[in-house]
Length: 547
Image 1 (cartoon, one colour):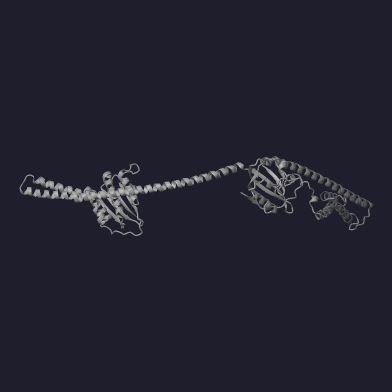
Image 2 (image 1 turned 30 degrees about the horizontal axis):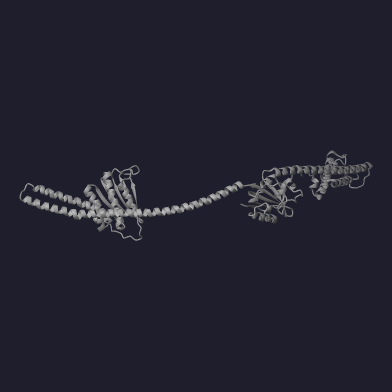
């Protein structure tokens, strides 16, 4: 990752001794603050412009004259003429230097002659004492100016000396920080050669300071890190002032060392590159860990691809086995249905006909014995009656095995017949309720739905002891719902284990793409639904069956 900074203002030129600029605090891309005390003792005359200093002399003399006139008006005549000008001359000399002090002295003398010494308003002096006093004032003013200038000169020298001492201390402090820092640091010339390096930098490369100094950075950088030379060119051009990147250095032993490197530039006043500061933090352990993680990820991805291919093959095999199993189970169901149909036909056409013949023969013999007044006539009639009852049972069994209405009239009529048969045979009220049109299903699907409803009614009668059973057929846009509801005792499907009948219902539903749900209504009983999805875009509908 590379971080770059925009160019700041240029720094001052570096001194010839390399790291002196670091001691002065301008080792970064902009000049740092001066050491404590350096510049704070600079005298005001070195700051004020020339015009301002001489203007201050004029203002001081004018202020002294105004103050003298005010005091004279307050206390009366007799106030010494030069008493207010000594402080003005002294202040100007101390603050502004010898020239402004001399100007203030001359101006004060002229003002005194013109405004304060008789005759007022003239530059003539009548009294010799006033003349001597004026000459003495001028002499003292010149002396004050010269002494003040000497004092200011000594103060400047003292301040300059203190600043130099502070600079040396700062340089020594920063040089110590640089050389004894645990962070590898170096200073490079614009041509890329090392100017200064610290101990940590030499230790990182496994070289001595003499081996590193004077060496170009390209000789120590890894050949694959071409971005380092490009960064130096951009630093020299002034496009950037700092850059951060992961870089490899060549160790003396031959291996490479990964470092998080920060390179920042210091420019001359004209904007040209003065030198470059390099800070490095070794990250070889982190890079080795990252490379190891990358290798592990690649290995893991390859293993995932291999396992995915194996799982895909396994899934294909399982899907083929499941398809084969479903096909076999469907064949088993179809065989079971065919066998049930055959048994139903055999019961209806074989046993039913034979029993009908026996019943007819019994009726004939019963009538014959009754005509002869034979005592066994009643027994013969009873045998004929039992035979007809057996015929009805055989027919019901035949319908159970093979519902003829399902094949002839469709699913709804078959369910209607099943409801009527349940009511007549078991004495339980059973009805078919239809809502909307029902789709005309495939014969195999119709027989599965019929068997599911038949199993629901059987389970309700066997376990629920209901008084009423309802068979519902509800049409919806994308599916059709068949439901069997009873008002029996019900059961908790979560606690009661599923029997063979319920499992068979679930399997039949999966074969035709339906879903079975067992519910317990709030009013009691049990409700089993079979939700059948409609697959085809066009469905031939059956007309409603009158209840």
